[in-house]
Amino acid sequence: MLHAANQTRLGKKNIERLRRALRLAYKDATPFRRFRRLAIEQYAGSHYGNQSTRAVPANMIELMVNVLTRSLVASVPRVMVTTEVTKLKKPSAVMIELGMNRLLKDIDFGDTHRAFVKDAMFSLAIIKVDDEKVGEWTEPETGEVYELKMPTADTVSFDRWVHDSAATKWRDLQFMGHRFQMDEQEARSMYRGKIKEGDVKEETVDRGTEDGEVADMAKESMTAREDYRKKVEAWDIFLPRERMIATFKSGEGVDDMFGEYLGTRDYEGPKRGPYIPLRLSDVPDNIMPLTPVATQYDWHEFINSGYRKLLRQALAEKTVGGYQKGSGKDDAERIMGAGDLQMIGMDNPESVKEYRFGGASQSLLAIIMHGYDRFMSMSGNLDALGGIQAQSGTATQDTLLEKNATKRLEDMQEQVINATKQVVESLAWHIVRNPLFEIPVTYEIMGRKTDLTFTEENIQGEYLDYNFNIDPYSLQHRSPGEVFNQLVGLLQGLLMPAAEQMAAQGVTLDWTQIIEQLSKLSNTTELKDILSFVNLPEGQAEFGSSPQRQAPVTKRINERVNRTADTRQAGESNVTQLMSAGSQQGGGIG
Image 1 (cartoon, rainbow, N blue to C red):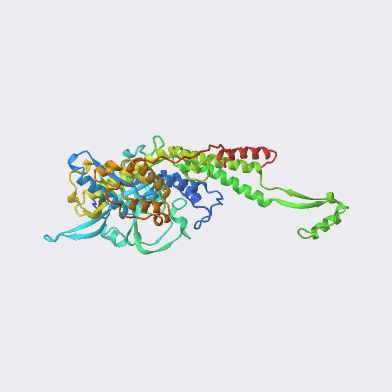
Image 2 (spheres, rainbow, N blue to C red):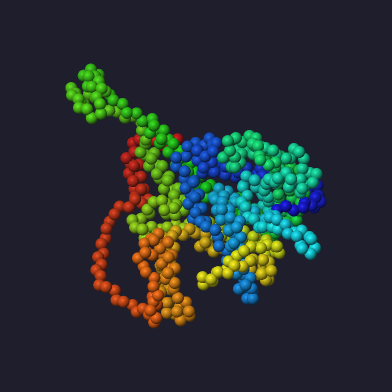
């Protein structure tokens, strides 16, 4: 992270041209920052922090974002390392794979990865891969001191991001970078004589950036706040062609966002640079993506506007009693004075009636329900993905529909896997080329575990000799019930039928462990209690290799039962009826 700055790599003219380009690029991204702030405010709702957002009774954005995020990434990705160089396949590829998977756990990449995907729901998502100093090591013979570094991967907020807005493809970007904070002592050490007293912030202040940053939503006030440590804010700008990082002071306000030039340093990292984007849907000839929230925001606003109006109508509803003047007055007074369930005598019951005025419009409710169905459908069949509502009359049909619904996610899942693969490749570049990097790993085969240490000395060949891939199934959520069914299917379909062949090669099924796992996955502790584990007599056949027994005589009755399911189709039928019934009422959304 911290490198000595080279003050002479960029001339004054280039520095000024870069600063002007940065200011224009930052302004060009203003509409995207504003929409992102607006969408996240809707996602958080009116009761989060110090917000003035209108009521969000049906938070469709929160529903969509969390269902899609969980469908795209539910766990820490698992790295698979391969190589086409035969002599490297076993020792080095396996060691790098073990080291990478351990590293992802140590740096809490699961949380970072989930935030990365969730960011992509709202805007361009960015991860920065770098290494940070975690200590020092002294060479015993020479006394020379070396930095110990750990690779890191952290998300970059789009509020603090800038890129070349003139480019139409990511590979054509002339610059990209982000704003960051560093402690006063670090800044003074790196940029000697360039950090003035006015650059040191004892308080965090509003920079006047449009409507504020998303990070300000949870804060009571956007005015000055005292920080625990004094900080200096700066911009790191990566220049791909020059393979350098230029640093500028961060100013206050959009027009002065990029302040004094502090210097440059050489970039040490993979060819793609330190920043890796995630764009779930590309727009031709544009860097900025079309996000899921942007495509469905109008439906979200439509539904909530309707619900707010429906609530106003319901609260304005009045129920009053009326009576016919003259003969009905006495009966009306008797009714007003009567208690609940009390019997009273009336001269003319027809002269007193109850009248209702206003109330919630059925046709408006039908339109809202129609909007809800359109949102769920156009967002990728969310009710099937999220298990919110039955889609058919049977569980089997629902399972098939859920699998079909996931096809809508295939493009997004491919984008997530590709971006994650790039992050993993960049992290691997840092550990493979770091002679001082060490991490403990455990190698397990056939139930036997061996503790090892990943170091550069254990790696043969070059970084480019290896291929890094992501197991797509590692990103999916598997419930204990799903794992149980997969294990039972594997036992019945492969392992038990092949028990004899496996035994001939010295492989047997450990039924003690199998019962233990099935009991745990099914949450049926009684399973272990009703089974007794004893040593089999010598010569007795292994379980699964005994001859098949004939099934007992059974009787099967097939019965067709018609049931009305609470499905979306049934709901749409009800909407049609409501709209027909309420066609004589007003109640459009205004």
